[in-house]
Image (cartoon, rainbow, N blue to C red; front, side):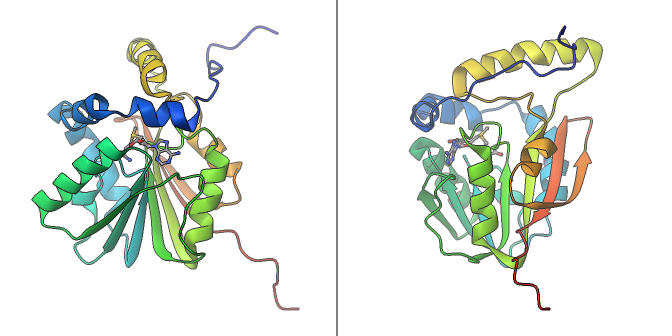
Length: 223
Ligand SMILES: C[S@@+](CC[C@H](N)C(=O)[O-])C[C@H]1O[C@@H](n2cnc3c(N)ncnc32)[C@H](O)[C@@H]1O
């Protein structure tokens, strides 16, 4: 059967080690030096998705700390990432913002936190990179308190004819460089995990999807 033009091209996952190596000092520096317009366009989606997170918040694959300015002052923030160069720049950003943030190098697919440790677990532009997104999402659910929430912000495929093709080319480069599988539909990916999707919202510009989910409910419902 012929492939539909809307079908995502198949992208095999890169290994955790390959992704960790790809997010080296050069990649981390270019991440913080991204175009101001791109950052500005993303700002409202980050604010919408994370701006009312409360309590103890875990930012999974926090990178250089792009979400930090959008989290309320009252939150206690813990950030983890596989890449040390990205974390060093997150530390600089936290210091510049005067925010107390606990940062740790850790694999999102094997979090070392106890069950039910966080009120909110947030993550942005990450599930397209994890070799096993289901494992990472299940881990987010495990460390989130039963009455907490998991908030995600992810890319989706831009369907506009001309810009769609331009971004497709750019995304090819992103896949080669850092392993991002930018054409996976984020909501479909989350539904493959044990999280329960509460809502998803798609923006056109930037082409991001915001997903709010909760941890799986336990089976022992009272009779
Ligand atoms: C596209 S960046 C997004 C960074 C940040 N969340 C943001 O919104 O700007 C993807 C991040 O995922 C991290 N990452 C990739 N695989 C990971 C893993 N298995 N565990 C933890 N972090 C990982 C990378 O090091 C990188 O910082």
